[in-house]
Image (cartoon, rainbow, N blue to C red):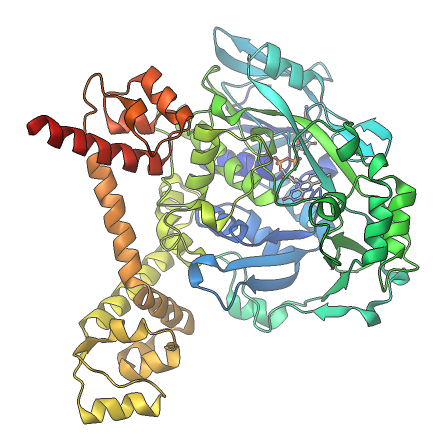
Length: 627
Ligand SMILES: Cc1cc2nc3c(=O)[nH]c(=O)nc-3n(C[C@H](O)[C@H](O)[C@H](O)COP(=O)(O)OP(=O)(O)OC[C@H]3O[C@@H](n4cnc5c(N)ncnc54)[C@H](O)[C@@H]3O)c2cc1C
């Protein structure tokens, strides 16, 4: 019954936390309610998407599992925002959700040092401000000095379908009441309520796909994991289509005339909903001028027997769900297998956490996933691996691994949560990352692979490949910078043959590839030495060349910031006179009176942008005092 690390919960956060801990060499126990639901996807049958794809790639670079399982269980792969800049492209995969779950559970069961116990954790064992273990419903006391809680939507979960309310963690699964009380009363953590929701699933044999638009995966699909062999993957991967349908005025009328029965509007639901993933009743109410909304019909499994109606999340009563679904072209005769519902649950204010995801109040107690106020499998998994890594490092008396905002989306996610907190389910967006050009999906392995390798989560063989990739890209980027062209007749004739404007001044190949119209083919005409590299490396060299100016600017900004964080804030400095800061930030700084910009940065809710402004004011004050 003695372990090094106990992970409570076998969702996406729990799986990554437990695997990281066990693979680092700790005797690890995963306690989860239903063994067959380890790795279950509660809502949509998809992984990734804009910014979420970045999280999966980063997780993979650190040695996580989500990318590999997705590659195996995936049934459609697409790169979103293909036509936009590389920083905002996002990989997304439809998955066979049954297969995903089975693979995840098998990985857990086949991992050395990792045990799985199908039990419900009831309370924490805490002594003198330190966690000592977990008590379960089967009267087992499991002992460990590090405990990671990853209970998702299960804490005091209440499901709403119209006027019907049920206690549940997910539909058909028990809610977790005692553990919520233990976190609140024994660990004294600040907790509140949030809400999320899901849509109905319909029987494929009752859908008329012929009136819907088909949406196929990419012709040359790219795997999520850096460890998956792309060629092999492309040869063997079978993809399924999704379908696009639309709501109409009739659908909206049905929904609107039942607003009075919508738990979201009647006050039955108190928790805050995810703003960026609104229910259909929310969309119809907020965008009353829109005469239709997109619906994406996504297969739940490779058998495609049930379809998930993405875009129609709802907690309206069952008969209203039936009417609104039947009002959509192609779904007139659809039979509902599972009704949509909303779920309200307890979460912990993430400002209770350090950047390591350890709670500030209880030593050895870590929290990861939806319990910290996030929404999404990817956000949960990313926190899970970090909690698993940091609990392991603490056992070795080592400093925690804290990824910076300029280093990883995972760094942005955790920094946002623990410094600002959240009052609605937090999801990742590319716009949340100030340094997104440095944080491209494709560069996740070269950015983070060394951490995974140092921790023993990335093999020597893979790390050698990562180092070679980095070397080749650096070499190619340098070559672009060093290759110069003069605006003479011969060279301008070459440009003309490529439909490119002539050169006016001496230019580097890098300046030329920065032109919007430049692609790999044109780059190779200018610098044929790059021909020897693989297509993937050529693409990366082009991206580095195209954005070199901006990437350099962002890197300089980071270096500058690192330097000025050491700057002292004069005693008695008037924070209320800094006009660019919100009243709340001014008050916070006034009450903490930080001695340096670094100390100010460590205060919860103080953003890098606020530090920039403060820096300018301190410089101005220093200049004034000299005059
Ligand atoms: C109805 C619904 C709709 C959702 N809609 C969306 C959406 O639209 N978009 C989106 O991105 N995300 C959505 N999500 C959220 C998504 O499912 C989660 O973000 C993600 O699964 C969180 O992962 P997690 O590991 O934190 O928790 P979960 O995946 O919820 O896993 C929690 C695990 O903890 C276990 N557990 C809980 N309490 C105990 C206990 N006391 N003892 C032992 N084990 C315990 C459970 O059995 C489970 O294995 C939705 C979730 C639900 C339920």
